[in-house]
Image (cartoon, rainbow, N blue to C red; front, side, top):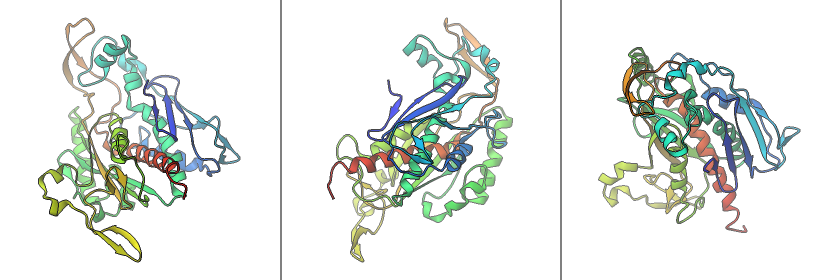
Amino acid sequence: MSNTLGNIFRLTTFGESHGEAIGGVIDGYPAGIEIDEAFVQQELDRRRPGQSRITTGRQEADRVRFLSGIFEGRSTGAPIGFVVPNTDPHSQDYEEMYTAFRPSHADFTYTAKYGIRDHRGGGRSSARITVSRCVAGALAKLALTQLGISIKAYTSQVGDIDLDPDYRRYDLTKTEASITRCPDPDKARQMEALILKVKADGDTVGGTVTCVVKGCPAGLGEPEFDKLHARLGAAMLSINAAKGFEYGEGFRSAALRGSEMNDPFVSTDGRIHTATNHSGGIQGGISNGEDIYFRVAFKPVATLLREQQTVDTDGNAVTLKARGRHDPCVVPRAVPVVEAMAAMVILDACLMSRTTRLD
């Protein structure tokens, strides 16, 4: 059962949207790391519902409680267990969905696989379960900081409003200044206006998140089936509503010639690096020491506050109008989740690299 991520740094998650709590167990976390619980909570606050007028109205404090693996403010090397209680589920909003399959949700596929499903808020398939990922991702960030590695993501597109694909054109320290998490103030205002309009129409809209990893050393990743970009892609595509992943020039490279795509090697002050970075910091599945950058596409949220045609569990045609509290656009709240997944993959790759060389 694929509830675990990682090889050495491993996260196993549990919980459902309307269950008692969301939680997880982290194994393989390095000992002696100073655990800044305020930072962990800050990362959860970036993901939590009810944070602005463009997100779901569900009110959750998302207060994490660590159960093990931390002593006197430092990791001990033992498994780190944690829980985050669910306090504001409103399960009654989902009674009509007990028998009706919501279009483009996991209702039908979960029923086909397990023969049973928790219809309350989507159960295990809800984006609520990304709480555990953000806890583990925050801890991974704390460890990566000691290695000089930083990870920053931002909203790069909402609907047809998009930024220049070159992340270097933007001051990423301004990302949190906008509720859309877009570092371009003008585009951020346009995105916010579009999301509010879509919300008023009872509709939803998608977009993309761009992520940049800085300070990553050369040599991370495996050469065959565990390529670094493949692991990043698998991690990103495991996020709810994610529909696409590309790194470096991505799909644009299909239209380029080799003379345009190749990254020439140069040596500066005794350091070998590339003059350009069309490869996105990864070559042959292994990091080359340049910035790793990638994009993740998210579809419009499937729950619409308007009538949709579907069928019930007996195959009868029904009209469903969802109730409850839902995001009109998942992208702003997906930003910290993308960072968390990247942090876990990169930390795991760093730990794995120690098993291949003695120096």
